[in-house]
Each structure stands twice: as structure tokens, then as C-alpha cells.
Amino acid sequence: MTIVDTSTGKKYPVEILPVESEDFNSLGKVRYFFDWRIERNQEVYKLQMTGSSDILGLVSMERIPNEWRIHIRLLSVSKENKGNGKKYDKIAGNLITHVAKIAVLQFGELACVSLKPKSEIAQHYIDKYNMNVTGMALSIEVPEILDLINLYDHD
Amino acid sequence: MTNKKNITMAENAEYGVDSRYKSDKERESDATVLMEARLIRMKNLSKDQIIRAKLLQLKLKMEEYLKNPVYDNRNYFSEFLESYVDTIYSKRSVFAKDIDIAPVSLSQVINNHREPNEDFIRRLMIHSEMAFKNVCEFHEKTWYQVYFQEKICDTMSSQEKWRPEIEKHVRLSESIKK
Image 1 (cartoon, each protein chain N blue to C red):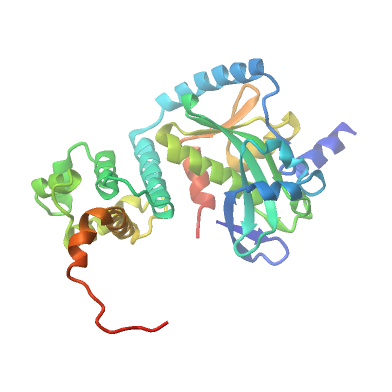
Image 2: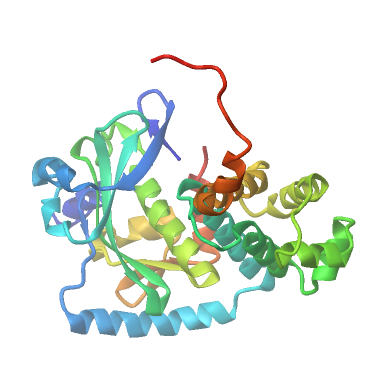
């Protein structure tokens, strides 16, 4: 998986790892929109450039095995990577893909990742990640989930 | 004003997405609607789409095993092989034919009655290159890695059994000082 430096177009490999308890102290609102300590008891992953400990994005999720589904709870890139002036691109895409890979690993052809963003930003996820709209929720399943993984999951 | 606000929100669409359910009622309602829609979409999946999903799942399972090896009595190479063959073929004998081995040999490997030989793994490697070509990236060394990872796990976890006998045949006649 890689992210792209928007000013040079250069790609950098990244790794996505579980957040460790000591990380939470530095995951505050100022840089990561939420105080991520509220997710201390959830399954939370961080994205870092390989070889760096600087966290560029975070996602928390809930596994719902009886529905073959993983629901994304919170998602955020770091402040300097938001909007049109972002330093690196593809951070959120890699985090969503990481969740998608866990869903396929666990549920195979029944895998589903769901998300329930505010209506103002839902279109972004529909357009960029090819998510389906079902009621108020967005979801991605087979076959689109396979395309997403293939798009982002490269060495 | 609202339009300007929406544009800003869209620009920041990946900064601070709160997707948590606010109540059990909301969670249940969403689950029901989503499941109904998904079941319809699942019914429309083609056989190829299901095979692609299962192969990707298999690849992810193999990668997971390589990242976090498990020291137990299960035979992971055989299990992954069985899953691979049964995902693609309705009859195992057709796979055996495709890699030019006797069906009984395949059966013995899958059922842990014999070890796969070098030729078997090489043919499996080439077959997987063909099968995964239009599915996802699949490193050619993956089957080998699983095979040898399992050997390491088996050897390390069964030392109580083999070590006493083997130790009888090993000594260090030259002294090595600290």
C-alpha cells in the first residue's frame, strides 16, 4: 500500500497497524479531529509511512459477524492531509481498504463494509469508493469491494 | 451560504467522519434495511464473482498465516490447497489432470497422507499464477512460504518428541570459549 505526495507525485509505502495504548495520548482533536481516547476499547488502526512513527490517519471499526459485516465507526486523516491542500493523498482510501481486507478475510464472498457519514459528504464516498447507498447507510460488498482492494493493495 | 458550507464539507470529507450509531434502534433499523438490500445483491452475484472473492479470501488467509504463524496440529498447507482446489473446480480429479498428477496423489496430499514433492509445489505455483492472474496480486513464492513455514512450526512445536533421540547423535567436540 502506498500514499502519494501531492506536490511531487512520489509514492511512499505505508503500513497499517493496530493502535497501541500509549498512542492514544497523542491522538487528540487538534490533529485528528476526534479525541481518539474515546475509542480506546474499540478496534482501532493507524496508518504510518513505513519506517516512520508519525500517524497520518486513523480508523476504528466494529465487527458484526452475524451480518458478515464490518462497520466503520470513526475515520480521519491528520489535519495537514485534509482538503485541497493536503500533503499526502490516498490515506483514507488505504484505511478503508484495510477494513475491506479484514472483511473479506473473515467473511469471503459475503463480506461487507458499512459507513454512515453525514449526508453532505456521502456523495464523496459513493463517487470515490463506489459505495452502495442503502437507506441512510453506505456499504461496499462483492464485487466492488474486490476492485477497491485491488486498486489500493499493492506493494 | 449552505452551498459554500457543503463544498467545504466535501473537501474535508475524509477529516473526521463520525459513523457511529447513536442508538440501538438506529443500529437495528440500519441492519435490517442493509441486510435486505444485500441479500438481493448477493443473489445476483455471478459464479465468477464468488470465485474471485473466495480466491482473494484464500490469499489473505495465507498472508495472515505467514505473518502470524500458528503452532498447532493443523496442516495449513493441505487446508489451503483443499480450499484452492475446491474453489476453482467442482471435481478435484480435473485439477489433478490440469497439473498432470494422479488424482490419488492429490488426494493423499490434501488428506495429509503424503508430503507434496518439489514438482507438485512447482506445478501448483504455476497453476496459481494462471488462476490469480485476473483476480489479485499473488506472489509466486506464497505456496513455498506456507509449506516451509509449516515445517518450521511443526519442528519447533514437536521438539519434545524428536529431540531426545536426535540429541543422542549430536555433540560438540571442539570447545568454544566465551
